[in-house]
Image: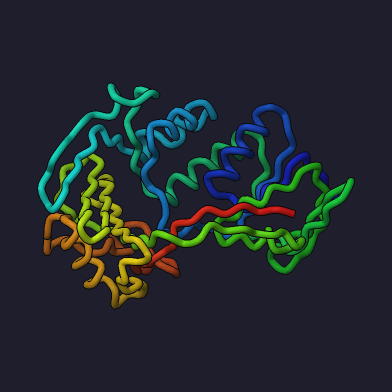
Length: 291
C-alpha cells in the first residue's frame, strides 16, 4: 500500500497551497483532483491585499503573478450610479499591497503546478471514494477504473463548498442561515478602465454590484442582494438579460457591446458545465464541518 504524510482531497487553491508548503518542508503529499482540466465557476477572481501578503508568505506570489494576474490599484465606489469616492490600496492598507485580479482556473493550474514542482504527487482525473479514519488512516482512490488503497497520516478534505469528501465518513456540517445571494458572469468588451476595483451600491433597494477587470477587456461581474429583497434567482442561460438589467439598475454603466465571454475566444465562462456562460445565483454562507 502506498503511504503519504498528507492526502489532500481536491486540487484547488487551498489544497495546492497546503501541498506546496508541506512538500517544500519535506512532507510526502498526494493531491487527488477530480477534474483533468479546471473549469470556470462563480467564485473569487480578486484577491484582497491581506490575501496577496499570505500568497507571498506561502511562496506562491511568483506563480500567481504578472503571468496571469493584474493589479487593481484603486477602489472606485459608486452610489446610485454616481462615483462618490476613490482611493488607492497600496498606501492605505496594512499590507501596503494592491488587489490582484485573475482568471480562477488559471490560478488553480499555477498553484497546482507549483505544488508539483515542490515535490507533491498530483493525481488528475481521480477521486476519493472512501476515507477510513483511526490510528492508521487511509483512503480509497479511483482513477481510470482502477481502485487503490493509500495510507496517510493526515487526510485533508479540500474539495470545495459542495465537498463530497466530508460525506464519506459521516462528518456533520453546520451552516449559518443564508442571507445574501450573488450572481456572477464572465464578460468581454466591458469598457471599464482596467486596474480598478469597481463597487456599485444601491442602498435603497439593498443591492450591490462588483466588477473586477481582467486583461484583454474581460471582467468578472457580480450582482448581490439580500435574500429578503424578493428578487428572482438568476440561473441558466436565459437569465443573462435579467442579470444585465439588475447590474445596470444597481449602477453598472450600460455598455451594449459587453457580452458573455465566448469559450472560443477565452477560457470557459461561468456556468455549470465547461464552455457555458451561465449567471448562477449562489448563497453566501459560512459552514463548519465537525465529526
